[in-house]
Image (cartoon, rainbow, N blue to C red):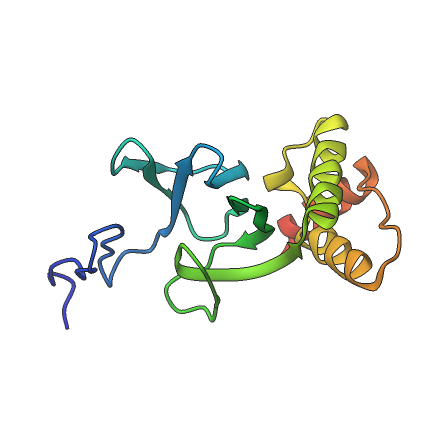
Length: 173
């Protein structure tokens, strides 16, 4: 297959992606009080509106974003989940996530409203110290995932941690 191949066709034509495309695409859906998929933070570079309820946002390789999924039925909440992921380049390995093409490096995954709420509070905490959560160190999101999974209180992200992360990132080849 070459770079001039037509987009891969899907049954419902929701997310057509070229094999040579280096962006990560996330399909968002909003059906009031039924299905709500949204981005909590992250800098997308493209947005394609599919219809009134669906759109696709695209991220460059190396971006960090939070993807929240919530769904309910007549009896209450069915799914409450947040994933924080780092997008990958074309040759990098990745993990698959629903509604994310091709996938990403999963830094944090939380299921169930109590854990999702804790993650959202931690995101608010990062924003409260004046840092965009998509610029925070990936290690912080891994730490948060590990602590919540083990049932322990996670440490808050600090300006000193962020400054150290910026120095490490600058020093990497």
